[in-house]
Length: 117
Picture 1 (cartoon, one colour):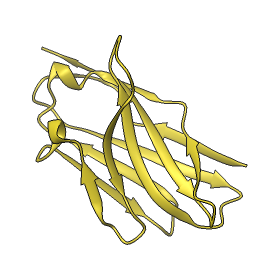
Picture 2 (picture 1 turned 30 degrees about the vertical axis):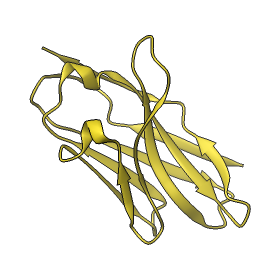
Picture 3 (picture 1 turned 135 degrees about the horizontal axis):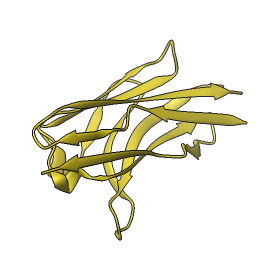
Picture 4 (picture 1 turned 45 degrees about the horizontal axis):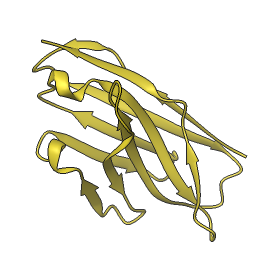
């Protein structure tokens, strides 16, 4: 089994920065894509950013230029640097990985990010 543990969620003021981390552990053959999704209050879960094993990134339009995703393959970790936060970024942020030859997907339990105006 694979476990994902997110950390770094917090209550911050608009304009501030925050970095989320996610550590993957367990029976891990090879992590392919890693990423972050978020679920704002009362809304559906949405893509934030993904990064392939070769560090090719993909970002949602709403956060381009403000958020940066990165990963450490040796540590099985993925990060999300979030700058210039706005109240619209308030959400539960979920870590996501795809692992192994079958590209099985796994989710973390989520970490709350709240941005006050």
